[in-house]
Length: 113
Length: 114
Image (cartoon, rainbow over all chains, first blue to last red; front, side, top):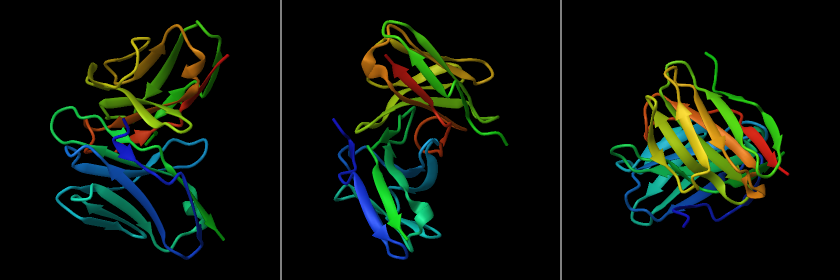
């Protein structure tokens, strides 16, 4: 049972345009969400996170939006750069105690120069 | 400061054998988590250790086990290897336990079972 779903396995965007990566979750206990980026032959690196008390968090070119009622979050990258080409993982966890992090299967983003 | 170090980077084992993977977390980090990454399955959570105690466990068979030492270094063991165990095994360390903290990943160990 995939509790964190990234339904688009891949996405291609022109350099300079906006990239929008989507993520849906089913577990209503999730209240903390993270995005990680992974290049080939490297481990994932943390990109940005958002708590359920917020609906938006911004860090430079990266913005994450959270819609709790729809159990949906999205990562916006503006403007997209060729170096952003990577696999992006959405992750979620519930607060309180020793809660594990649940990852989606990832979306491969290709930014075309 | 040094990042998360996983050894070995690559490993080829025969079905039925056992394997031990090692992870050295970032200095000062007391939480170590292990994940299995396979094509189409994303990162599947194996277990998390904090202060030498397993705090959380994923849905993997008992052939997968781990431990953490007093210096926070962790090992993961897989016994009676199966072809389906071929995957990239990632270790992540963080200051605290659980999901509300940024995790730092190692480069992974690529295990191939033949």
